[in-house]
Length: 209
Ligand SMILES: [Zn+2]
Image (cartoon, rainbow, N blue to C red; front, top):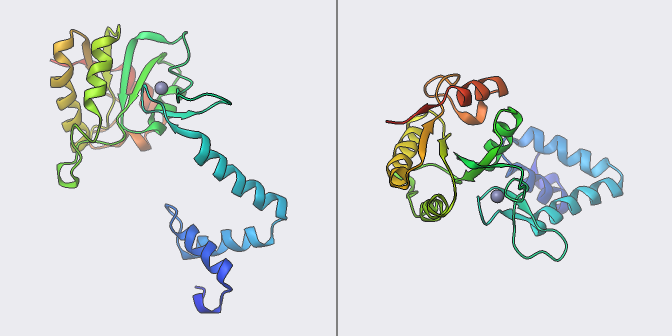
């Protein structure tokens, strides 16, 4: 354990910043911090620049909420999936977070479009329909040419509550609503499922009554 007072201010600031990262405790912060301190200047500058570039160029796709990068001279943020005309425009999969898009894409069995909620229903934390931008999702489904909408939130309590809300919300639009099913144990999280489990969950999806 390092003694903060024994550190020079710049190193102290770096270690404090590293400790704010998820999964980084005091020991890891120390290891990473001293590694950066000892590494060649160009390497450290490259790391810092990469982070700045990410923050400047990357944001939410204005269509689906996935991660998108602004090209030179482009104003609107559109992700690679929404920009790809080869994708199956008749299928829409609703997921919690952008990294779920990546995980479902890796299964190789889904070629449709996505919609990223950015969270799940959580009344205690004040997260509801407004916070999840469900009016824009409903508009997208109303205006789109989707035949099937797949509800791919985790089979946890919050994931199920969100899925049943979405079911009620989207029912009037005449699309087939399916729910990912087998492969994921009840209460298991989509975030931690492996590719095979996600593929099985997707292939075993069932139409919601
Ligand atoms: Zn998109």
